[in-house]
Image (cartoon, rainbow, N blue to C red):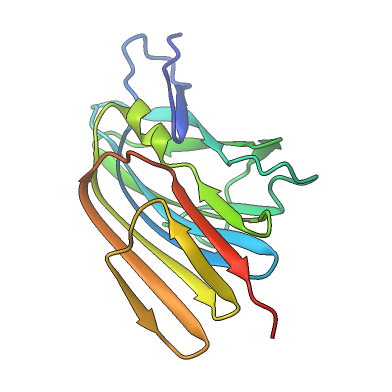
Length: 193
């Protein structure tokens, strides 16, 4: 049995093929949110199995540690083709693992939703591990939803646009051939009214 290991979503090939290959992680669409307590992530992750064989991969999904007693408050993983049945996950500290089964020459979209307490002035999502896939994402889109009581002080990646909805601001990013140079980090202040 040959195991392959990479990262963002770290992948271990759990198939029996001696010449198995990892899936291709080629796209992500993520919505972030910051409120007075939590940083939330709601993402769709796109994978391709370019081989002519069925593969079963163990995906290791890292979540940034923020030194809180519960690094991940809540997490759910779904195959977008079967949203009625969550994928079984195993969680240890800041690592979540689950199995990705892929038919030959197939594409699969996995939805991962989680929240964690932020530090009160900073939230971060791990992007730099994309480099372990050894190629840029074909496309990536992100948005961040914040209430007006969250004042953004600094972004690690400057947004492309923002829309003001009165009590809510939404920031947008759209990337093509994206190999991140930074994690997605937001520094902010919580305003008291």
